[in-house]
Length: 288
Image (cartoon, rainbow, N blue to C red):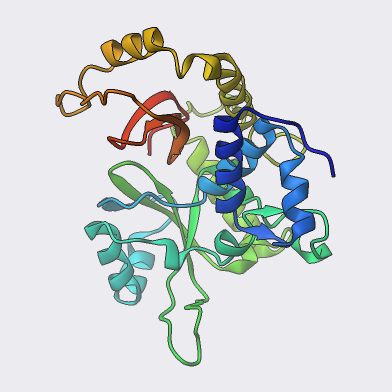
C-alpha cells in the first residue's frame, strides 16, 4: 500500500500516534491502513480515543441530585467508597474504564463485525459522561466488572456523578436506556430556561463530535503551516519571547539549539522541546 511522503518531524509525529493507539486488529494490514490516512484523520482517531481517558488529578466528588437521589447515593456509597477515595486522592482511574479503551482505540479494516463502532463512546461524545466500573477485581471477577455503572462528568477539579445505571443503558429500546436517556437530556439542558429549545452536541455521520473533527483539521493545517519554521532561528526567538514564563511564572530555559517535536499533552496540541521537556500549547481543545 502506497503512503504519502511526509517531512521527518511530521512522519515521526504520525508514527507516534500509530504506535500509541490501541488497534483492532493490531496487524500489519491494519497499521498500513492507518499509515495511508491523512494527518487530520490520524489526529481525529487519536483524540477520539484520548478523550476516553481521565487525566490523573485530585477531584472533589459531587452528586447531581436530579440524576441520583440522596437515598440512592446513600445506599450505594458503602460499595463505592474505595472508588470515590481514588477520585478524591487523584489516583489513576483507567482500571475502572471499559476494556475497549485498551483494545479498541481505533477499529481498522479486518476487524470482526462485532468490533465495529467500539472505538467510539457515544455517551461520552453525545452527553459528555464517562462511565466507570466499580466492581472489585478478584478470582471470580478478574476484570472488576459490576452490575452498577457510575456515569460522571469529569471536570478539572470536580467529579460530578450524574447517573447510576447498568449496561442496559447502552441497549436502545430497553426501559433502562429510556430512563437513562431522560436523565442525560435533563442534565444537558439543566442551565437552559424551561421551554427553550436546545441542540445536543453536534455529531457527524461517522459518530465523531463535530467540534473534534474541526479541531483535528485545524491541528493538521497548523502542522503544515508551521513545519517549515520550526528550525528557523528567528521563529525560535519569537517563540521564546512569546513564552517567556510558564503558568507558574518560572522562566523557560532555552537550550542553545531547541529541538521541537509535534505533540499532544492530553487534549492540548502544540510542540514539545525535547531537551527541556517544555510544552508549547498552540490549541487547547478544552480544559478538563
